[in-house]
Length: 236
Length: 236
Image 1: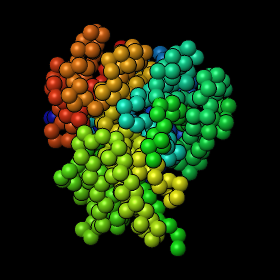
Image 2: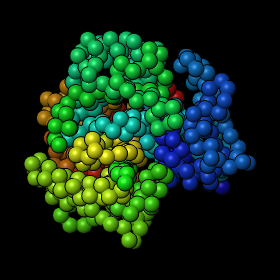
Image 3: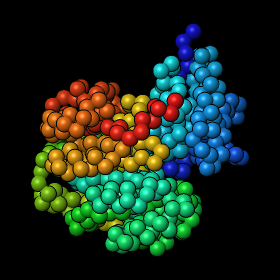
């Protein structure tokens, strides 16, 4: 009997209509879905595509508590990968759901690492929050021969500063409680007027604003976009 | 009479199934579509979504010859924006198609710059070639608190080197005739073994390989991905 296939599927930034046609079709056809979720509730990725999921689907839920350390998370991925492997060994395909894109800061890669050598895998790229935030602001993310750097906010100030100095366009993710420190850094670098803030991009509670509008305890799903390069609007 | 709305729509990296559900729906509903194209032929973005375009649709084609200088391209965007504005003034919506994402190195931004102050605009983010290439390789693009830098190959060696040195993950785009120079640079930096090559991601003629497999005259739609950070596979 041939083995089943693992699909790693990006569900995009939040709006169910920003899911690709291929992802939607594969989810509609799936008998077994897997996804990460917090202690309680279905998790963000499953929520985005809830409409596409059949009623009699088998669900493999990997519950990763918020702010868990790396070691216990690894045992959760071990367990999830084992549950997925049972189905793949039996010739059944498994669809794993991942918000945004599976390989762009996605935990799917930890499951992939455990299964890719032994099973066929296909990954369906998704719309990332970075381009969704630029779309919300109607502002170019990066243009011409400019460079773009994506930075996680937990990085120390020195690491952020040196990378921002060399970039033309910057996206800062995973803001959360780091927001006050990031705000001070950007002000000290003279970039406050070049910074846009977006929270919950593409969702009903989307927030668009400037650095001033970013709350001190920013949602995990929020981002700062900075345009330092040649102003694309100079081209008009 | 109220004005029409301009939609800037990302058509993704090439596979028509990697178009979002929202983009597909808006194209199916469109009476007027606009897009960039080379001297002859329909252009890449229109080709991706050809199946969704109605037979009696009005098409505004902005023909931008390859390797054109900036100044003449500006007059082409001026003309295109004027043609679009005629429809918007008459209350008709216009859908502009853009391969990948409209605001990620997309020429849509030049049309947007000319129209955004006078007309309602909505942008539909698309899957970029960067995440599509990572998906092709089944390899993480960027993980945890690592940084990602996106670099256009035409940048000079010094500019590329300093940015690559500071990054954990790198995507180098717009390779074309710059490929031999980029290859030498990456070898001199000791990164040859950490570099993956993808051409025509998500299409039937997709090429996946290492730095050795990249042709000296690489297609415009090809990319190098470099993973310098903590190896995500160490987590298994």
